[in-house]
Image (cartoon, rainbow, N blue to C red):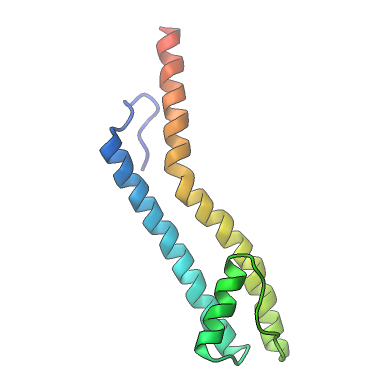
Length: 117
């Protein structure tokens, strides 16, 4: 997936293609999490679809719920979804920035190898 440490640094165009691919993966992760949250709030929270989407989006972005859950199932789902949303956030950030961090360390490693020669 990433070039070996002894390989030359990717050119800018190839790096931007990689970054777009990882941004797409990040967007897909968010879309799946939003879909799961919307379905869960609709089924377990007994909310209309638009309200379920709103609640899922608010929880996923860390802003908190909009509607109060009345049923035990809704409250349990809301708890689980809030905890999972934290993991989704960390995962999405890691996937999005992985190419940038790799490029930084790859460049640093190449510079250190040049100094050692």
